[in-house]
Image 1 (spheres, rainbow, N blue to C red):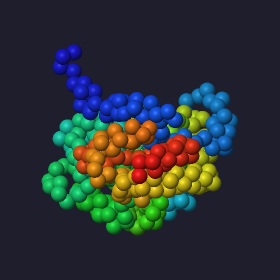
Image 2 (cartoon, rainbow, N blue to C red):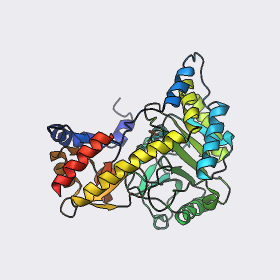
Image 3 (cartoon, rainbow, N blue to C red):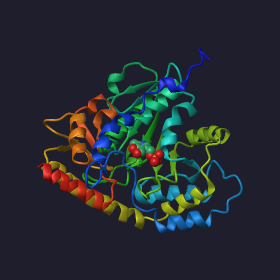
Image 4 (cartoon, rainbow, N blue to C red):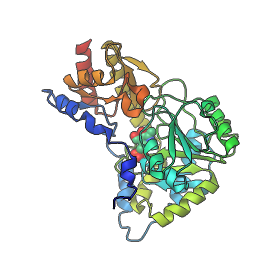
Length: 371
Ligand SMILES: Cc1ncc(COP(=O)(O)O)c(C=O)c1O
């Protein structure tokens, strides 16, 4: 046992445990806590999606790892209709939420010791976790030119970004794609917030012809229904892009049993086929974002980036990340410290606007009292 190389030993401690005392403080507020820390959807699953799930519930046989042809066609159709991406349904692969795909991609691509994988400097922590699980070396960097001769095999991009809400423009993405293609590296683009642009135009996919020149070679884009359709509880996401990479990943995922349940495949297809519920949900988030943004700014926080996605990236001139967390918790509002996402976040907090209208109004009222 002593010389077993435990994967768990390669991973960071789960940071959210450090928030527990502040959560207790926030919960002691007489009108209850407003939890804006995690960013989990709170609104109902759309009716038509629940109906599709129920209609497919008599599902005794094994589903296909590749997904039903109808699901893959719905995903390809959505990419074309909503994001100007021309994708072949054959190059679509369902995943059990995008977190699973992020965590396992380096391993499934065969990366390991001696390989380098780049992820954004301020980032969703699962990129780092997945790279470490594979045994490859993570490098947190937004600039690829400074990397030198390291044997980079995979580059993660995330636009719109968690936690900052930053959107990468066409030019930036084109440069990443060109850099990676010159070196034979794969670009994995986590686009799970792509439909949630607020300012500065619609976020663009790495698979858009303006970015990739019409070829998906070396590219994988990752999409999730968790936020668009309130399906975090269903674990519904998909990857699309380079046919050769999709085929390779499918071959491994079949062996590994990474299979989306049949009723979830049916529900996800129904969600992808409908844009009305996504528009309504986006309107809800827009109103919550406006209320929280105004209240945070009135109370002295400055918002940077945050042009898309589900978070406000906020800094206070007198408090660092944990100082802001503590102050807000005393007023019953729980937010995430920016250093959860990398040392460069030590001056910021991430404020999710995934709470009910009632809780968002309660938070805004408490923030206005701080002004
Ligand atoms: C950047 C990013 N990628 C992936 C995920 C995982 O989403 P899911 O597994 O629900 O698709 C999240 C969740 O918040 C995220 O912020």
